[in-house]
Image 1: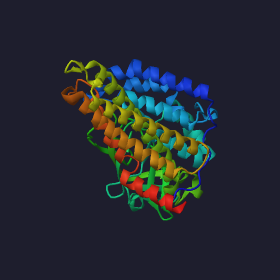
Image 2 (image 1 turned 60 degrees about the vertical axis):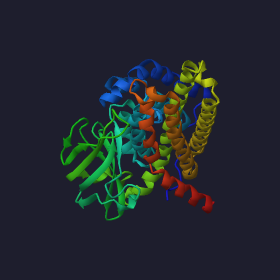
Image 3 (image 1 turned 90 degrees about the horizontal axis):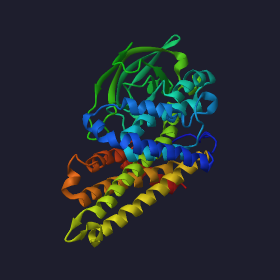
Image 4 (image 1 turned 180 degrees about the vertical axis):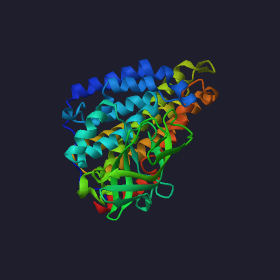
Length: 390
């Protein structure tokens, strides 16, 4: 089970939060929405958009000001993720594991580790990623076989990791590997944008149904050597990597839930606009009861999803354990996103099935949220066990 929560950044005043979210919303409408489908269909990394995100300070939203970040709170970050996902869900993926890495350093990193990496993470000069899963260790995280062997003042890493988002472009990897003490977190530096670095090889890019424009890779460690001081938290962190990561994944699940809200909102707004424009049998389809019933259910579930995400973010922000609330938000919001995306395609009819409109993109992106950061089947077990324990 995750360890007790560590403090989040100080609460952001509502006016500042609204200003930041509004700025991101304007960026999305101006720069992202007009080009998102083109990047998506080409499966092309959006270099210019990411550079703008760096200039806006989005890579340092929750990193403390003294470490070069904006020092804003989790609800602000959630608002940013929702807006980015409204325009193109892949952009939110650029930030998710980056912030899991940053939070792990903020919570468990030694002062030297924080000073070394957080300022560069805050500017986006250095991008972070999480390397946890393996072919036989996805849901079953305790089945990790990637091995870190102590050799004097160094460790030698060997093993294969799967589903590493940002794995090619990241320069700092939060790696879960097995040591004599148990599963341990290592901070691994690599050359960004390079397929190989001294015992680390990005062996292949994993093709996906959706979530395109952002790499998800397999990484092979073959005798990669790193200093012993790269253990997250130093000697105290040996064998504690799994609870460290599981605690940070609560934020990851809230991120996934916020993404789902953004995608569902986009699908709902597109459906509302189309329902007023498309005319059948002499009147807009929005005046047909069958369409009205769909729109009512879609809007209600989107609003419920937003409230669940806000509740989970508020509890996490307060420094409280929120695996139950994060699981509920992730479960409901992701199921809602898939349902709303499907209904949006039904409302749009044949044109929704074409690549002329982004409806098909919402439909392909939505399943990721059901699977990512722990499948919804696992979320249901987590929720039930927490309810029974409480």
